[in-house]
Length: 232
Image (spheres, rainbow, N blue to C red):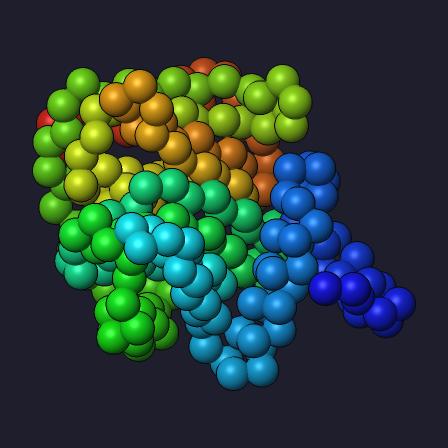
């Protein structure tokens, strides 16, 4: 889709609410989709939800909502509750107001694409979620968890990487554990390769400052302990 000069100006202004590396990592298509999701969010005063069928076995969910750690945890808990399997996702979050988060999720349900009825249920449940913590999460034990901290060499941002064997509760549990840390999530992605799930989370401190190495290592170790031993 070709944007007008006015829309391009609005898109450029919109992109400034993200971290500096956003325009390098997000394709022009993703930037435009996020812009349209944000427009829907403010026009309707509720979460923006879009569903696309990729194949007979997979669907793509596009979602925009408030950037709240507990809200993200609840979204993934809802997907788990509805027996929706997350095969891959990417996330971008604004660091300046209005601080929305944008999700792209490749999903399936019982190895099939999401049906319109399932999508309608998910959309209504996600719209009903609050920015505040609404449910108590009880972390279950996940086996063979690896959690590491580093400063990304390309983006120069604190990066927490969490990996484990495939587990249906991985996303819900990891986001629930992250929500208990006082961190600001600004970008993330997940993929499955060589029999392991690997999720990468770019984080900042609660005040938007970078995370020093000693604190990042302590956070990564705390996440690993929480996920391995079900501390919640």
